[in-house]
Amino acid sequence: MQKHDLVHQPDVKPVVKPVVKPVVTHPITSIQFWTMLLLLLAMFGATDGTAQDAGQNLDFDGQFFFSYDHTTSNGEQSDEFSLKRGYITFRRAITDRFSIRFTQDISIDEEGDGAGDIELRLKYALLKMSLEDLGPLKNPSLDIGVVHRPWIDFEQDINDYRAQKPMFLDQNDILSSADYGFSFSALLGEPLDATAHRGMRTPPGTYGSIDIGLYNGGGYSALEANRNKLIEARIALRPLPRRLPGLQVSGFTAIGDGNNEFNSDFHLFGGGLSFESEPWRFLAQTIQSEGDGSGSYINARRQAYSLTGWGLFTELRPFSVPLSLTGRFEYLRNEDLEHTVNRQTILGVAYIFPNRSKFMLDVASVVADPLYGQNDFTRVQFVTEIRF
Image (tube, helix red, strand yellow):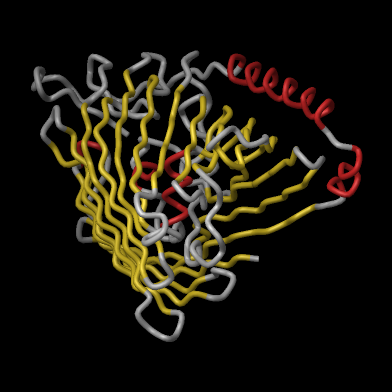
């Protein structure tokens, strides 16, 4: 992504983000230290009665997105069949308290000499430690390795249409869905019973849930470009757990530096309002941020831009057959340059199978500022999402 400084220097040439030499020794050393520490805890915390039985458990699942896209941009049209994404996941319990997860991320390389090749990356590679309840914090757990990040993980529990596009802040390189580091999560209060939690996928705490972690900051697909770490946290509260358990109010934040050698600022604050039920899902979010996690939104003096934005997602199931109507509406603005980074609308219809596999047809319209290396386009897309 390219950033320009047009506020005080109208005559400067566009600034191309320089190639950053990643420093890989620091994050790897940190991950190794914490992994060794938790493995030692596992050795002392395992219970003999269940360790052997748990060690025999191996779960395997997968998810693939195949698509046909018809895109119109700058008066030109293109048609393409493609593998949008794929995930293969292995899970295994190694004791009654410790388990591991390994998820392979499969995508198509779109840049450089390897364009067109199938890429394999780690999306998750973690050790999970289940902890004892801590007062009102129920079912707490600690993940270490390549782990989920708090907000995108929560958003994807509501918006099950990752096959259309990455989530709002992930798509715009502000937050990532996974990263190197560790995270702590817990329910607020006892879990809701199955009847109250029907139609929901977010954590089932009666009063909500929390999630906080320390990460490299650039995301699971980026190398660490500096020695700074990022703190990200989320809290979700159910104001009416008995009458409207699907209603949640959320707050989230990320504090650290962008993933570049200039240590540009990154301070994000956001809020969300969501509702989950079998016939209707909804999520509204708004953010205000100084910079971004990737370190891309910077000016010619390597200073972070001020960003604001909002996103809406809704899913309706008004029919007796398993058809869903979906809508996404998103807007991101650079306040310093008084420019719209992009404005996106996606409308779709999906046939949902019992295991959440899908056939989807959607139409997307994106209005983007060329200042950020993006162009306006309209896309009609048919996606087959296969889960197994």
